[in-house]
Image 1: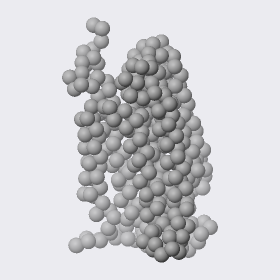
Image 2: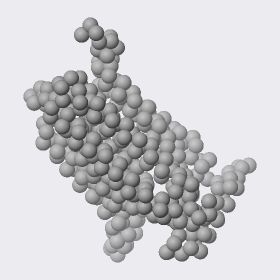
Image 3: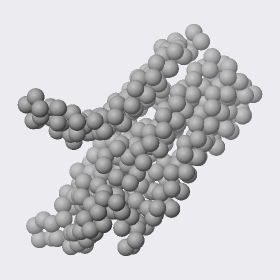
Image 4: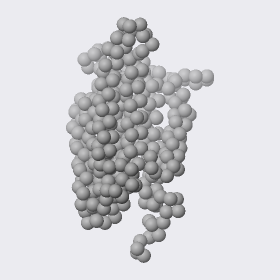
Amino acid sequence: MSARPIATTRSATGIATGKLAVWWVVGSEIVIFGGLLMSYLMHRLGHPEWADYASHTNPWFGGINTFVLLTSSLFAVLAHHAAEKGDGKKAAAWLVGTCAGGLIFIGIKAVEWTIEISHGYTITANGFWQFYYTAAGLHALHVIGGCIIMLIIANDARKQLELHRVELIGIYWHFVDIVWIFLFPLLYIAK
Amino acid sequence: MAEHEEHTGHGQSYYVRIWGILLALLVVSIVGPVVAPAIEEMAAGVGAHAVKGWMITLITAFGIAIVKAYLVAANFMHLRIEKRYITYLLITMLMLMLLFFAGVSPDVMRHEGTNWQNVAAEQEIDRALKAQEAAGAESHGAEGAEQH
């Protein structure tokens, strides 16, 4: 107890500091992704020629990836559920499952991008594809980063250590899921 | 278990149920825009000309995205039982996003106004639309890649 920094244990705000920090990250991320998506939206609405560019994205890839992320979010909340019960091993297992979802998501994206790039739809093709790769790429980086942190937390949870962190990575992961929930109709559905 | 349910108010089956609803909504958001033209035609057939395909796409794709995001935030992120000020913090960030859109979009979405004209955007739209028309249904879209 005495070895822990005060900042990680005090909660003058009514929320544990670690959790408050994650909410602050989520708040900052809303501005980052929000700015990007709003920029995309205003260009999409202002450029009628983008409708044709957008018609070349494959909604099957986007739809399957949405399913994968929603399912991984379920696993993340079940990991939290197990951690609250004090079952570190189960929480770790659900976190590994969540991470597997993230890896499947990245794998599908890799196949999708390979097909698109081979057809000439590269990041330099036009404004639409610039936004497409930037928004989906930034999101994919968040998935990869989340997976790495999740495995570190799962390793601790397995040993019954720092179980409160399971909830923290869950909050982050659900946010990444929500970003994709909006990217999906913007990039794949609105033709 | 009891401790967790006391904290969140929910058991494991509750989360699975929310996930089921999310998947059902996902199916609607994919199918909605596909069947939108048919619904528009059917509605016109019975005299409901106000029902347009783009409205159905807007509701099923973006309206449902908002519902899905709410379900994830309220139930999986437990915002429903979180301190209220966290919700206010997140809403403030969303407002900043809308403020950005309100401030910048008139300059981006319009290509001319009083004493200004975005010549580059107009030329690009003109060029691209002509190129798409010329390329025809088979090969259009990749033309941007070829010309840049």
